[in-house]
Image (cartoon, rainbow, N blue to C red):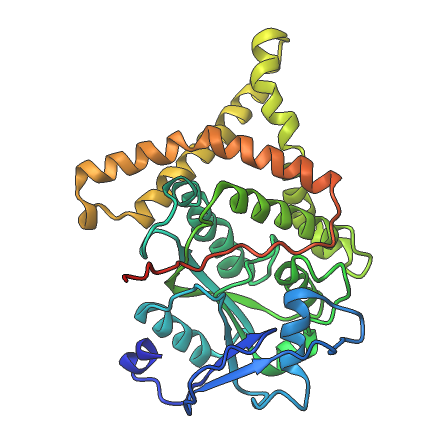
Length: 341
């Protein structure tokens, strides 16, 4: 709230959506929305989709169709630059949906291993996400579920009431549905801050849910193939990760001749992946803030996490493909402050 006020915003409010009442202090800019346990959507949407859809119901929603919503996860922190970027996006008025960059190393770091591994996601935002929105204005490869800027009338028409298949990766399903309906997207300048998962178990569960949710979207008959073809290619390149990873061992013990062009392509893909870790560190740990020595250590640390990340991603993919897909694992990102007695 203070960040918005510091930038000079006046017409805004904060809605906190929860399944259980948390009894927030009364404030004219804060509204607590408690989703009733008996509430059911028309298609039986669950989890986060159900909660978001409840907020759009006529008896609950108090926003005008011309208003704008910024969706944030519970630990997402605004920055002044992100607020300015959102205001510029809204005033531009050409697109109904937008999203910006999220970094994971600006606030208190709980787990260095998962934070350095998430540097890859920072590069993914600056590359794939920004490219698809700036050039095509379409969610060709989907988007994330936080730092989401939407116009109320467009969000209501797309809706989060998308059944079981749209309840695990609700952000992905929503983006594909909006794409089908002809809405346009753009990249929002200015970064927000989040935390990486606190444990390797949560890190793996997070990835497992992503792969399961995206698979449900890719296999959904409600989304035409022409709209999800790039998402499907991206998803199946992830699903086949165990095969490509096994090639590291198979190439050493069972070498077979490969075309020179194929070797070049594989080498290029590997180099780009390594570069994305380095780029993510550059964006997350700027050298002017930490100094050259720490910066080099961060780059080395991020590269050292690659083997651990590969193992975790492989387990998550296998578990995600073989396991039950209509589950929603909630990653705990609440920092417990020690009490001094």
